[in-house]
Image 1 (cartoon, one colour):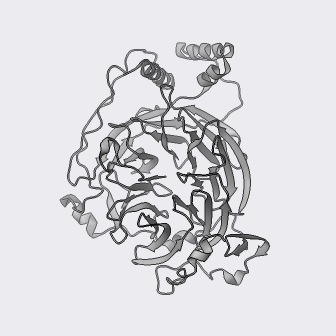
Image 2 (tube, rainbow, N blue to C red):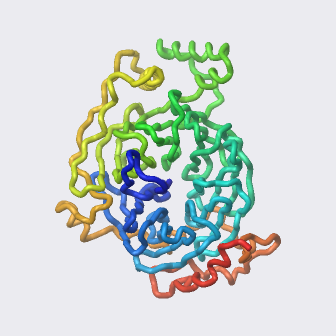
Image 3 (cartoon, rainbow, N blue to C red):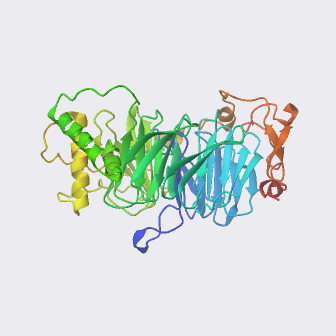
Length: 504
């Protein structure tokens, strides 16, 4: 989940953050600015614990952290073709690789590191940073759209397979073989995301009206959700909850949608026991006599919950995380704000904003304004009635009266994402920062389907058929970055990296 700073904020003002991303399990937030980058822990709602920051690399537009380890990958506009891998706890550079074109996105898990260029994808073995495979001649991918399963036992990769349609290529990053092609949408892809186990893949097209979820590796459609009907929007991010029960989607509008992935069942639905149930059954029966496009639209599931933002047009990403044992919706915008909402996992509805962290030190920011009493267009009326009715159907509330507006309480304070100042109440905590899990401990976790050998590696960018890497060429143990006997040596990846990363 990453947003890259390619343009300024609306209105001609420069975006405060050039990039921002959550780590793989949504326990950490990374931001990039003109000055460098910073890492924050998301263990608390009230405050952001500053884990690490660096101004050594200016104008950062990609920063990715491996879970809660000390490994961080950084790309700067000063060298857009070079990837730098750091161990920030020791303050050392592990290696750097240069490529034939600008780096557009980077994805990583405990087994693989994925580097996406416009017309190629490079797959590295994260334990020794060797290049295992180069996927060449992919359709032009100017946004660097790709996804990597965080489950290192399968390491599935997904990327667009067409310039004109929403075709998804599913690739196995573990066996280095193509799996299948999914015809996901009629229009061009805008966003894709795996769930935590790598068994589900969500996608949205550039129209942004329909979101679909497919099984992995079969590629069968499991769910279809309608985000809205009033206009086409740009979906900026998709994210599953860690338990795969919910899927959130953010866009360039003021609403973040959360969908509930109900258990699939082939059993006959129960007879409705309330009048609202009979109304729903009546609409379902009527859909059989309508045109296909209309009936499909009526059969698509609506949002289970929504988060209302006080802005629209800003680049943003969303995530669903469990913080202090409660489900939260997190939204980060390019303006330098992190919004934290409470999510009701039972009834859904409007998520309540409980905290806003700001780029301005010590500034108390109000919650985004409540929804307007009167929608702005007939389509808004339709969407509002649909949303209110669906929420009441779920909650068993028969009233069709106007629902109560969400409380707009102002957060008690906002913590700076960019400022260096620290409030008095946080000084004691800053004296004892939480030690991040070591990279060695992270990559040393056993894989459920680890193989003793992998496809052979060649420096011209690919796996050689029929060749395997001898066991003695692997590291004798995991990369020990917390002691003096590091493997590989910090200088070992320099010098030959261009030949390895650049296909001949």
